[in-house]
Length: 198
Image 1 (tube, one colour):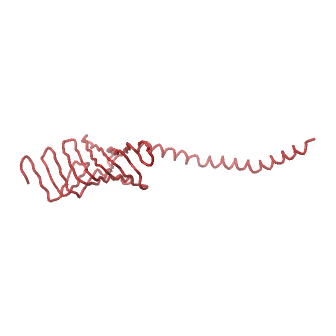
Image 2 (cartoon, rainbow, N blue to C red):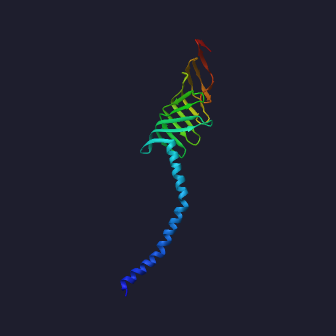
């Protein structure tokens, strides 16, 4: 004959299983239903880590780098000494440095002491000692510039100085298109070419 204690234990186990078994079944069904979402989130995390690499230091990133392609499939890279996210889309950069390559192999580099990278638009706003260098020897310096990475265009409304194989140029502002393959300047513009001032 079962004892009174044995009967109480059996009754407790039966009552507990009435709640525990449905809870376990519900948990299993929920995990089966949400499994694709877990995979999708893991894939998204891998894509983000592939595109944005950095060393985490507190609330800032050091040695950050971002890889992307423009609207014509040409690669570009943005690196920075430090990067701090100040919004869902805005990243404040110190020492930003961007490299871009054209189909013909021409390489262009633009850098400054400070910058803001808008990830959604792939737009880089540069300030303080902005330098644009093209591998044909052309160097342009200004105080501020906006670079549309996907469109391969840049513009600035600050005084601009350019030195290159053609000579020197001083202007009130500039616009570049096709990743610097074409440049426009607005005046007053002063150009010195082969010893001739215009």
